[in-house]
Image (cartoon, rainbow, N blue to C red; front, side):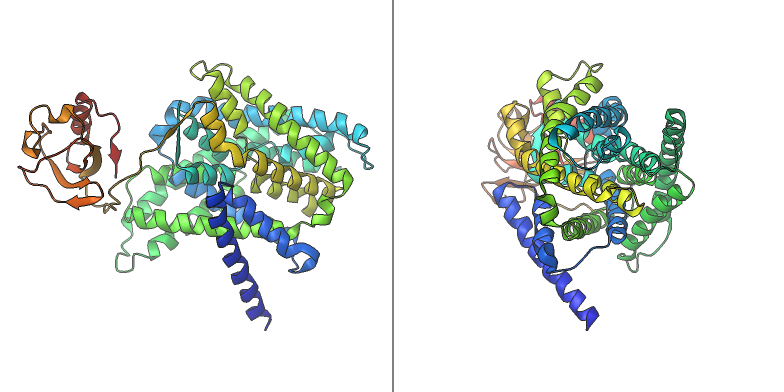
Length: 497
């Protein structure tokens, strides 16, 4: 009966979480926050008992591995190339600056708040280090769910930062856990050496395993059962993480880079694999946030020492620590406006990652680790409530947003087709030589295969009359020439399938 009860409770939690996700979309709130809330509600007064920090840490490791891999797969390298330098600086120096600024505040504010436990500077630094990186799950989920365009390449920058800054926070947390527990001294040189080794090994193996994964997927012949390609890619992602970690590289960086490589190279059954990983990533995010919600005790969060410290740290991090570190890191990059820097500092979302890192002191027996965990959990809730709910509003207020054009033609192009499909909107310049399809100047080896007019779809002929606002589904063997030709007609937005 125990197994049946476990499945029943698990199914109930997932069902409620999905409904909460739907409600979050309608309310404009972060779905992950509601998943967390569902876990907290069901865990209240041990309605559902879950108190294993080790199991929560394991779930977090698995979930973060897939979240980063999937995030890398969905990131186009051409989008992040222009923001590579600021993204890397934010992911490394930005994490260190945030940790130092936040730790100084915690160390100074603790006596004022009357915290009974002794908060030394190393302990304050450990508390700050767990919260020093933005959360990839939250950033990927919120930015992509909003379907809101951002100027100045801000979305690729924010996704690159959140996908690659976990290694620095992880290294800081692990080093400081050893220091606070009395196992070692804080040696800046050793920490820097550890960081360089982990980053170099992680980046190198991530790229290598990414290329190897592409070769394996394309070479192995299991087309008789295409569903096994998803299993194979999942195995490659887990192998990349575990092997890299085993040889003292950073597994989180490795899986992100491996996903980036896989997502930007041709692989068989790409669309099926993307669909599988999107669904699996959402499942893991739901399970992770439910587990973390079940783990915390609401009464512990309402303890005055935790409550006051959490609120103070949350406000300081949002309005002082994150902006200071962001502006310092982006100072050399003159192409970003002041409004863009403000927005980047605002979207410093905290989520599952800080809570996962806050589990490390618990599982390693650090004194007062439960206090640290509760403060981090409360700060995460504040960040998701304040920042997560205002991602779109802040972009609109700063004048940095634009409405992304949605695809009219929901076309799934098989991976073996080399021709490229695009969606183009007819304008007046396109019809200057005549208003029929045969009058339009298009490059050779290019065909208009479908027209959408006022939600009516039809296959055109040469004599078909076109109107401004019609959407054309175009297939071409020379997409670069097509782009050049339509831009000469004043059409800037070409949606690729």
